[in-house]
Length: 239
Image (cartoon, rainbow, N blue to C red; front, side, top):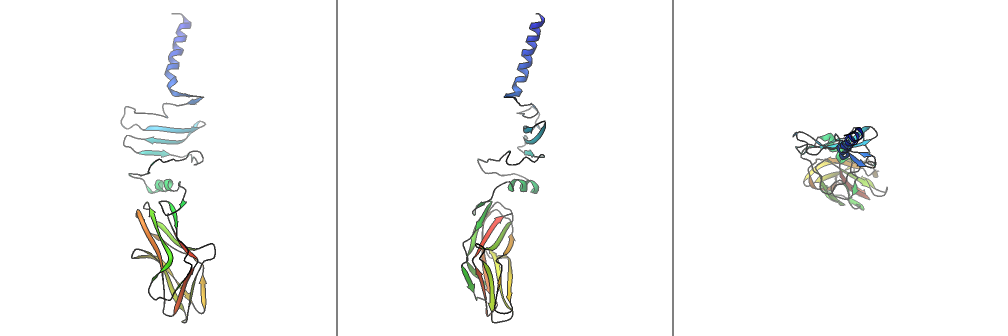
């Protein structure tokens, strides 16, 4: 066998050895970046995204079905998006990583998981009841994944307000948040004469339990007083 044939044979072997690691169009797939079923039981099956000469993001799955995501280079969602064909669930995840996952989702208006739930307007609600009564329309049911829930009253279109008036000085009344039979937040309004108005802002945080949560607003007054919620809405969303 002459030297030319030896060289040709060697180059053919080299090409056959390296060809599985070339994806074409100048894109290289290296063995240390994609590994499927290596013999040792602790090996991770790795998919790595590179830009330039340094790794930007790495996704690995080990034989215990643990998913590892390393995004030390902080790749933005405009570079890599997350598309889920089914439900996303975790057998275990720490609080920091849970926040990273949940905060990557866009919120939609609505009462489903990760939604921003809102009620209709209270209209010009008033009451003179000394026992707590429901405020018109200020009731919502939000489905959650188990995180704490921010519940708040705000105005509709910038025109809402709370009011308190009465023939005693000071006149007093209360607005409270209820979930079932439990009061989990609220506030007091007072007036020293005539009618006093307040900005329509009151909020509270409810404990995080997965499932449906029905929240409502109630109001009551001291004897002789009148409390009002005008053009207010109740909103809630998971934190």
